[in-house]
Structure formats: C-alpha cells, structure tokens
Length: 405
Image 1 (cartoon, rainbow, N blue to C red):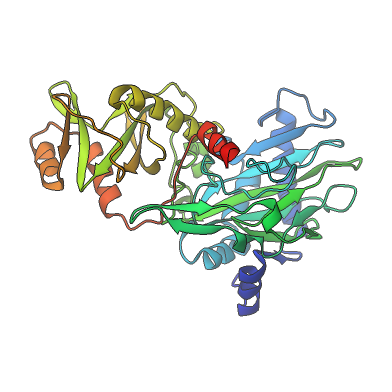
Image 2: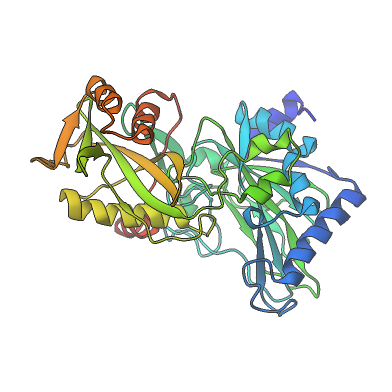
C-alpha cells in the first residue's frame, strides 16, 4: 500500500492519518482470536486477574508472543508500506501491544509532566519505544470506539508544538509541548478495522470503557532504523521473531532470550574515551545489572538508573543523560552499552585506575588484547554511526526534572 500525496500532507499537517476499513473482516477476526487467546490464557499483564474481571486493563505484549494470529499484522503491507513512507525509510517494530479493557476500565493516564490529567503524548526519555526521535503509532481498533466504548481523542497539529533541539553535535533533546500549547482534542471516530497512523508528538486521550463489552485493539509503535530510542530498545524473544515471515524478521533486530548481565557507558571528552582498569586490561566503565527479564516493561530506564548510580560511586560524578548504542550477547547474558558526551567536563576520573584514550590508542589496545572487541565496537558506533540520537533518562530523573520546571 502506498499513500497518496494528499494523505502524506494531511499526516504532516494534522499529526495523524485515518485509513477507513483498512482490514477485511477475516483479518480483524484473526487478530481478535490472537488477542483473546492471550488474555484468556493469562499470557499478558494483569493475567493474574482472571478474564473477564470488570474494570481491568489486560496488556498483551508482542515480545512475549509467538502467535501468528497476532504477529502477522506487524508486517502487513497495509501497515508497513505507509509506515516506511511516513518515517522516510526502513523501519523496525519498537513495540507490539494490544490493550483489552473490560467494561468499567478507566481511560488513559495523564501527562507525566503534570499539565493534563488524562491527555498526553508518548514521547518520553524513559520509554523503550517512545524515546526515539522518529517514530509513530499504527493503531487498529478491534471494536468501534464510540461514545460508550470510549473514543480516542486527538489534538490536530499538536505534534508541531514539540521541538527537537540539538544538545551537541551528537545528540538532540526534545522541548516537549504541554497541554496548554495544543489545540482542543477531537474524536477520531475509529471503527473496527480502521487504521490510524499517529506521530510520536501527537497528543491524544483514550476515554474510559463505559459500555457492556470489551474495548480492545492493536497499538503498535514503529521507528526509523536510524533513530534508535535514547534509553534503548525493547528486546523481543527469539520465538516472537521466528513467528514472522523470513522477510518480516528484519522488523525485529533487537532479540534475545538472555537476561541483561551488564551495562556500560562510553564517555567521550575532547575526542578521548574514558577507560577503566580491569584485570590486567581495560574496559568501558560499567556495572553488573540486577534485571533478569530483558523484555520486561521499563527495563531500559531501570538499566540507566542502575548504571548511573554505579558510575556515581565509581567516578564521583552524575551522568545527566545517556544514549543507547548497542547490545552484545555474552555467555552470561546481554551487555548493553550507552554513551555520553561529557562536554561540560563533569567526569574528572584520574589515577592509575583510569585513562583517557584516543581512537588510535583504542585500536592498539584491541590489537594487544587488553580491550574487548565489543567495547571497541561500541566506541566506533558512537563515534561514526550517523544516527539521529535522543537522550535517555531514568523515569525518576525525568519526573524529578519535570517537577522542577
């Protein structure tokens, strides 16, 4: 499927685009079977509350699923073609989510910065999918979102109220809009089988389910391949990737069944990289992690929180932000690497346990076998990959900063 010029312009102007009756009844029925199978089996968040507990939200997360009746929609050409047009190039799946709300379930939560009790945009520096600087929603309602069931409201043009601003020559930050910056919200009028594309900065609100039936649908997030999430991607299980077609597996580049074992940080200052002494060699500063499930919710923001605390002890400085660089599988688990440009000179690590090394010195350390190849690869990625990078933060830090503003 290819969007028309008018459709692309409408998306650019409004921050969203609705394709009516995008999916055939049999495709909607297949998706419904997949969602209900996960919910009724308890293979979802809130699965400890037996379905159909009233006033309950069941969250089906795709990284835990290997059901073709669910995952086929991720690579559906009606979705994927427009996604890559709107993002401007190759994309990958950041999050596969279905929400099922039984009668009486409440609506969406509000803006974490406190400007609205129920409306928000999903760009957040501490979200695994939402901290990319080029991503969008692909939403497929599986019931009519009418006044009783709970409409999805959107603020036209609200995506233009947030701005991406260069923090330095490697990383950008977002000046995030507040509720009083945006236009009033309108009902998108979504019905079963429609398809909504929504910009990452578009403000929206889902109303409570006041009907006598379930409110549910697919709420997937896609990002441009060259715009990794600042706080790091969600890891899908290998079985989830295997449930896609051979061609569709490119949509899930971040997969592992191993736990996170360690987090490390590339710290650059004046063209040099900080290394720490390690058993006769050198390594990037870092620490073991205490997170066992690589696919758990908010895991990457928790990794940042643990890493920042460990580095404050090791280096004696606070790291205000980090950006995701890559994941490296080892025998004991996944090593996740972030980076930070210390242009303010906060990190003054000195002494025999540390060294600041140039690019050429790092290459020699690798040749001499005293610096791991994974650390060197992460350094090269930070220095040379032309990616659109945004900041990642822990949820605690992001909310603390918001409370002061």
